[in-house]
Each structure stands twice: as structure tokens, then as C-alpha cells.
Image 1 (cartoon, rainbow, N blue to C red):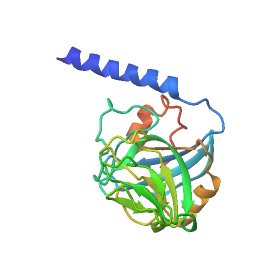
Image 2: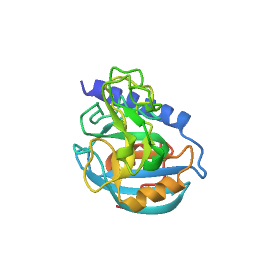
Image 3: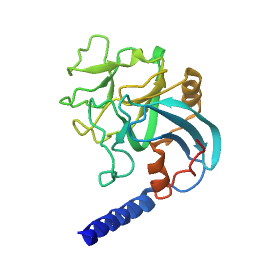
Length: 222
């Protein structure tokens, strides 16, 4: 039994190494927003923005899901990793590494919706309706509810039930699955982030274990 457990752990680590080194971007000027929490159940944490190895700002406070974090579907496979999984409606924010963008301000979001209907073809997509067009889904978030919102590209395959409509936005309490910051921080991110920017969000212990394999910056101070 012990041999089987050790063998399975070794194979999982080998798979992580191969996936990480094959997919990790080259070290350079890429932007990474690192969000770390104390554990899977924590509702708040700290955020630090890096450009390459340079710390641009942080750590600053951030609120995550009301039930903490769960592994999501992003740039790297997390299906074999220990920890809870993100599901639709579980009020967990997704853990992993995700592309960020696009973003919107409220004045740009007229008739713009993010679809969270798990049966709709537009599930986990942001869709703009024409003035006379009627929605083809049963449930969606009106993007005008956010002063500023930056889309987190969790579940890009639109797998039904794996979670949808995750954003960076402003707010002062735990969320239904997004990451919420002080308004001045969201504004700064909206102005500064470029295409290709990534969110690396997970408990601190997981970051220590996987950051090197995923080409992430050194662990920021608490």
C-alpha cells in the first residue's frame, strides 16, 4: 500500500513537472497578479502585482470567495492536485493560473452580460445584446452592476458546471467567486494590465509547491 501511494505521488509530481516546464512562459516582462490566502477556506488574502521579477505594488488586501478557494480550469492542469475543486454556485474563487482580460468600465457595459446558465451555448461568455435582441439564456449577470470588471479566464472550455463569470472587481467583503479589491487597486489594475497578463491565485502552501513548475515569481512576503 505504501509503495502504491509513493508511486502515485511520484507520477503526479512528474506529470506536474512536465506540464509546468512545457507550458511555463519564458522569464521576462510578463505581468502576474499573485493572490495568496492562508488556506483553502480563507475568505481574504493578499495580492501582489509583478512584471517579470519586479514587484510593481503590493501586497494589498483582497477578498475571495465566501467559502474560500477551489482548483479551477486555467493555463495548467490541476485535476490531479490535492484540494477542493471549483464548481458552479459553490462560492469558491478559482485557484490556479489564469489569463486576465478583457476588462470593462460601467459606461462601456450597456446590454453586456456574462452568462451563468449552465445549459446555454454562451455559458461563461460575455455577450453584448443589440437594443432589440432578447436573451437566449435563463440566467446571466448584467455587467453594468460592476463599476470596473476584469474577466478571469477560468473554465475557457465552457465545461458545464465548472464555474463561470469570474472577475476582478472592487468590493469590501467575500464574494460569490470573484476577487474583490479596494477601488483604487482595481482602477490601477485596469489601467496597467496588458494582454497576456495572468492571475496566480491559490493558498500560500500550494504556491510554495507549484510556483517554480509554473514559471511564477518568487513567493511574496505576507
